[in-house]
Length: 360
Image (tube, rainbow, N blue to C red; front, side):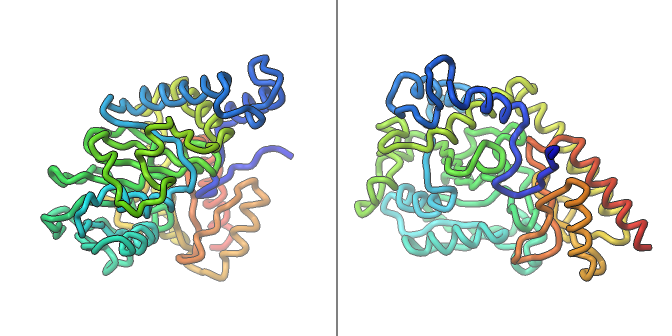
């Protein structure tokens, strides 16, 4: 069977070049006589993989020297707890921006450890907008400000980094990391689950400014302290070695493709043509305000919901899979991360146009 165009929000498709290289190295990595999956994480072979991965990520993202890069487990959801446990530093309140499903998850977990000030929310618009910066109500005593640059489910995205002054800015960048250049120096901490733009599920990247390390709450579990992982180079326990290795291959692939500037140009073009097709249609609709539509996750509904199942079935037959929207919002969703080729978006658009013609 030929490969399909997989529009899953995560685990998402990987670059075919990466998969082919991993396949060629599956049973014997660089003459070692063993698979990466079989290597000791403390052996010289895997140590070289880990070190090169960090070097490449630092280069791609232009990460300043005063930031540590961690390769952890637990998914982005573990960071919902690790952030307040490590960054409150004796303070009792943190600011959170509520823009949808994943923001709400982070807020609920943070409430276990501190008072949460909802500094801004777009709930009144059913999370189809970004709260204007002028309307935010930050608490002057907040330990940090947390936001979700891209809401994977709702398809709402910040296109600018909010200015929060001297307060550390924390971002759940799971759906946007590596999709474009960003100024890492504007953040106190960035975290991202790997299963969208980085690699397979099981790995979580954390980029943290050095001054934010070392003052975790006294009741913080050892595994939930950033200091633990900084001191052990992310190897306090056995890390997700194979996911780390695939991430390294993805970093190399991005470099070969021209880096994050090239990724941004392609991603912007893919998103614009898909939104244009939706906006020019009488069958499809995207509910998100145009100035905050996501480049990565494009939700859309059909004017006649009774056609949803037919749309999904015919799309699958055309080699377009994982287009069903999240259960909390319904409809459709096309996730078009770095690894989704432009051909995949063009094929989806052609299918959508044909599907509409046959029903009008």
